[in-house]
Length: 75
Image (cartoon, rainbow, N blue to C red; front, top):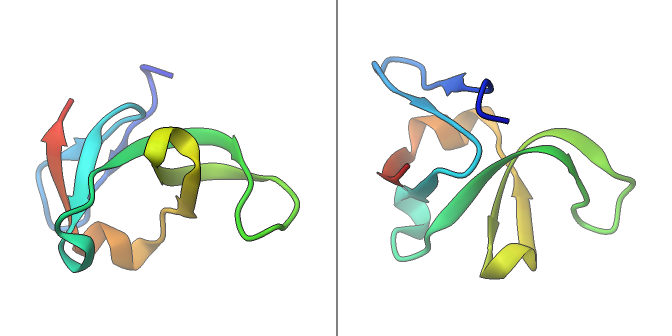
């Protein structure tokens, strides 16, 4: 997964699977960036970018508005 990166619009940075990020609207929560198959909301599995917390117990799709709201904590 090291070859995957997602560039943040209007920024000179990219996020990668395994990065730890925060979203301004959830500023106290650290999310781990993932790429691949995941399930969300009881739906069938999706393939794409997602954020997880609590060791993967909570998963949310990474959506375009999230990229306007994201900042990197750790790589």
